[in-house]
Image (tube, rainbow, N blue to C red):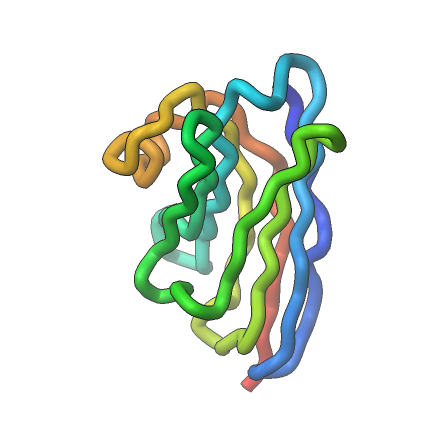
Length: 125
């Protein structure tokens, strides 16, 4: 699976952005699609995921109520709508594909087999 993410940019605190990630190469619908982020000097951390099996969505506590993940299997695309952005959301955002579907697996980056190249989100305060 090849993943191509886009939609990052510079936005003021309180603003919004929508990230997109297009997948190609293999059957999109059998993968759970997630988003991770990595701030400078920090580890890559889980943001959100939508399970392929039961379509459940999971979010990191830090983004609950502000971010919304969705997927369009017909377009092989997963989205991350980010509202009410904060300075601490500044990071490179990565989309990723996982063959797993449980919460414990999907919040672990080692369970993701394919990664996009990342898109930078900068939130100014």
